[in-house]
Length: 193
Length: 187
Image (cartoon, rainbow over all chains, first blue to last red; front, top):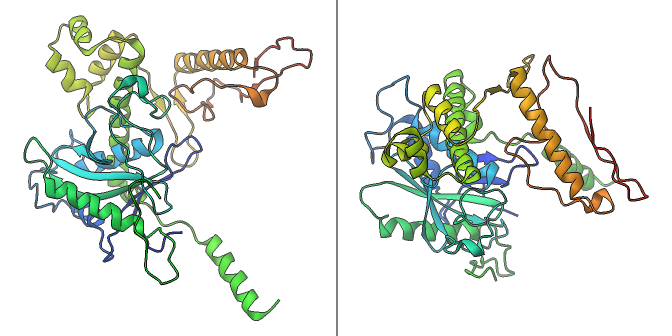
């Protein structure tokens, strides 16, 4: 059972929805970079990309709403809407992509463990969600957690951003771990043990 | 019951009654402007997802789609992999080139609103529903609990349209004990 409150982006509403929840991960110090980013992004104050959410143009859809739409779609369908909406970074750390925004995420069964889901590289071994249009997208665990965000500035994701995502995953999953007798938390291993 | 037990039960009852905290999407939709933006985003995402699905189902590559529409692969990719914010004419032409007729279906999200869909749209969904039922029955072995249901169509099976042109619909499967195939009734 989680000992920390997480900001929920999306929650299952229909029996047919694929995931249970998509939430902002929480670090060991209680901070939540994803929550902070989304609040800033919604207000239009994301300094890292001053060009996002340009002056109101009724023909365009707000970037924040579009990001919410993509997240909601994955929650319901279990796979992205297009092949360019997500990308696998490293060791089961994925990223949502919209405009210049990159927001990391991963999956967990919610019991304090995580089993990194990599991009599938052989269509014959595809075990993705039923009906998924992208054979390379794996079958994820019920809970998705959002890590950290950055603006796309080059061809590759910044190594420090990926490292931060991995750190947040470790610390966030630790909140779901049962406490040991000593009161110290056991950090989850990559193999879920 | 001790006072402690009573207090715990009261706490459990209050906990059960407390509604779940709103999600960030709920908060966005709590204002009229936010609800409109989210509705636009949701539709745009559905457009792009439908492109992905139509391309996969039809087997028509993006290159072939460009040839049919007399457009460059880059132009097709911009549309198919874009943000889904397209003209109606573009939607109609692209989906038709993939072998589909794009239609409109309005889901009510406010009280006292009803589904809006044309008769032909309803007819197309009904045809799909019948085919789905036929496939499900064909997959049936001996008892309904052993039915291997085929993948659901794109639209959510339980929430089919109810409009002025429709009667309430229910799927009924009957597998007689003598093993004879039964009729699938929809109505």
